Length: 399
Image 1 (cartoon, rainbow, N blue to C red):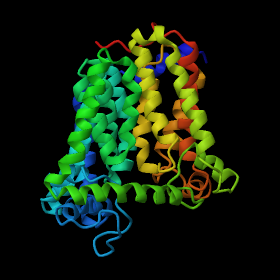
Image 2: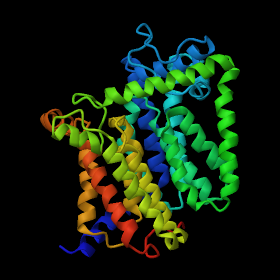
Image 3: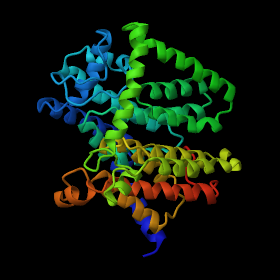
Image 4: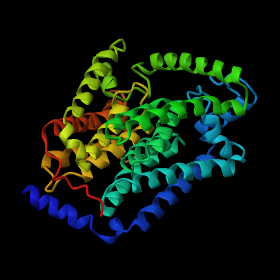
């Protein structure tokens, strides 16, 4: 069967009203969010939400943010003190209200961020469909990752709209909450007003550094930043264990394949940064919106596959990148890319669910961090495209 025939059937199927009508997908996202959050609430499976609430209450009580509180939750907090302000409106509510509203807030802001991308309406709908199951995975853990994904997307969107001040605000906010936001600096070269962008970064850094002091005190917050740094160093060492539920990354695949937790991140990070940086040499392509969107997809996937802290719920960040990469491909899409996409849907998105046989999940996918593999392959495919291809024919002009 030819590539054209395969693509024609795919286009015909996904052109049905159920897939193209935005109302259906938005309604489904909200229903899934509400049902999932209520289920977690009824089964008392919301430890992450308890950690989030703890950031607020411990900040106002001037208690250490990064020690263990076994009577409140298990595990440690790994979020910066500014997160106390983000979670405050939800933490102040009883759990039966705060928890579902937190989940709906994450869903709503991610949906809104995706709809702001410079894509056709049909492409935006496709991205939402593609990412729904991966969103459910992160939702079951009541994670912050959907909000972080939205922060990265909107930092790109606002540079596209020449609103550098707000893009800088989101980048700095992301850094001060969970460090991942720093990847928004990858869009710096697309800014039309770089001086304003740089000055805005300094301004918002001062704002978000000092803002949590309103809830506590300057001495407490400054000391807390030091503790945060120390905790992140410890966490990075813990992530590389061969039995860890984290380190679902390129490095994790290699470490687990060779059964050697001492393999360093550094060679991978250096290689990844060099490959990523070479994309910027194609200065003439900057004017092409598709090139910029492809770099956005590269950033989203890079953030996850090169982080030893990546766990299954983190992959909503990478999977939005996978979706963007796929929907802007020029038609007909090659069979190889379709295979990569299907592999990502099955191995990355569906592998944590009951749709994946337990034997495969427990004996191969989790032990060898294979959830990361399709995203790694797609990222290298993106890198190849960014080096070699002309982007004026890509399918990414907003209607």
